[in-house]
Length: 237
Ligand SMILES: Nc1ncnc2c1ncn2[C@@H]1O[C@H](COP(=O)(O)OP(=O)(O)O)[C@@H](O)[C@H]1O
Ligand SMILES: [Mg+2]
Image (cartoon, rainbow, N blue to C red; front, side):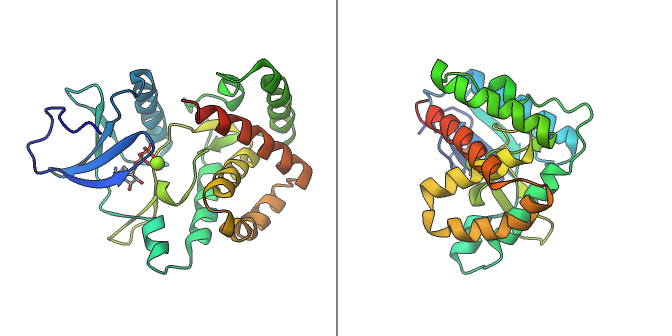
């Protein structure tokens, strides 16, 4: 991992790991240091996404440029991930997850500068898979209406501040405008892959919200299929 960026004076401490980056606490800020082989275009995109999300009021953590292309400075959340809290015995994890979905999906859409799922879903996907997923996204978008979807909602991307203020959702690079069913489906795909033993708890926690949106089992299954295709493509990055 890249820590020799010249940004740090040796007093940094690791506070988090993600698939693409390590995160450090340093002089009152958090610093996300991407792998040296990570595409800088994606870092630029993540910064643009964060700024768009800042405007919605859904997350106040700001990103700042540093002298190193692969290092982004962020406002520090003085807290812990929901995952850490669950591992320490907290039982309300899925309730918080369900609440975070409701919060994101009820945000105003006017003027939001986040791309549509339909505009990016086909990137890097085979022609055959594109033919499979695009009509489903079109059909479900027309049927359910659209909202902001985080599309990477899991316990490592929700942080609980130590001062007891409300949870903070982080890591918005995947956020898209889409029907909410795709957000529920994406988390289903992630849990099916990483923690299948809790899939039933997840389904129970979001069932009533999905029902009140009128989401049918068939449409959910279709959205899971789309999310799995996109997930498989990401793993090739
Ligand atoms: N602003 C922040 N303040 C404090 N900790 C953070 C902050 N941003 C990220 N983290 C920690 O770093 C981890 C990885 O960050 P994240 O942005 O989710 O990276 P990735 O895109 O690699 O998943 C998080 O799960 C969290 O523990
Ligand atoms: Mg993350």
